[in-house]
Length: 281
Ligand SMILES: [Cu+2]
Image 1: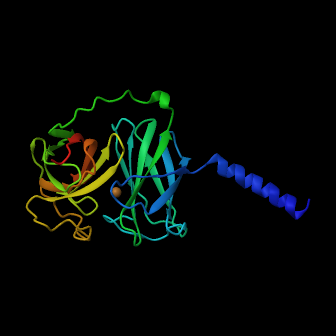
Image 2 (image 1 turned 90 degrees about the vertical axis):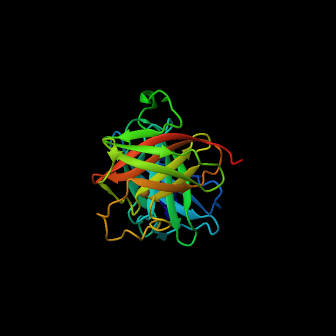
Image 3 (image 1 turned 60 degrees about the horizontal axis):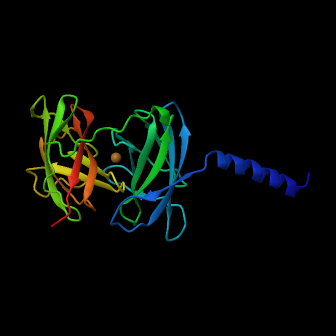
């Protein structure tokens, strides 16, 4: 066998290995923000409902892999996933990327289905960028029936914690404010901590175009402070106030699945809502 034949065999073998895990391509998911990156995802099955996600970003301007990321809310990569019915929500982090810039995130999905997986990062010098992948998990034969989404509920719960939400002032295309109160067993919660540096997170996904918005709450009485990721370093026990406010700019009018996450009793709590955002007058 000559060298050329050996190279050909090598190429065929690595070619079929690549085919076995053809990377999934991303869709940009941050409406209104300049798209500066694309990304690829390789999914490795590590259990019936667990997957290792290998995520690599490319700078669209240079075509080169991105290897440096800034921290956003204490993390270099946030990965958030919801199923196609918006009935589940998973939030994980990518730690530090390898020298080639590739992140590895292990996610445990609550049930089979097709998941919208969002990778939210700040590649160095490019600002926040968010991409989405569609990831099938398990057999779709077991997928849940479409959930009844009851929009504009004022209260929803996770365990003993419930959130009273007023999102009535939200308007598309402009920064508007929602207020929320976290209750525990019906009374304003007194055991709230910071989660990733802030009192609460709100992740909105537009149920029609799957656009993504991530906003952070601050204490309702804290004025303009407390919005940074740096305020909390070294103070993991700092209590958060039960009354919070949150500024968000939903890019378009329409229905959004919304998850509020906060730390209650030292556990991350996730409370789901559905909100209809009207156009600004
Ligand atoms: Cu995160």
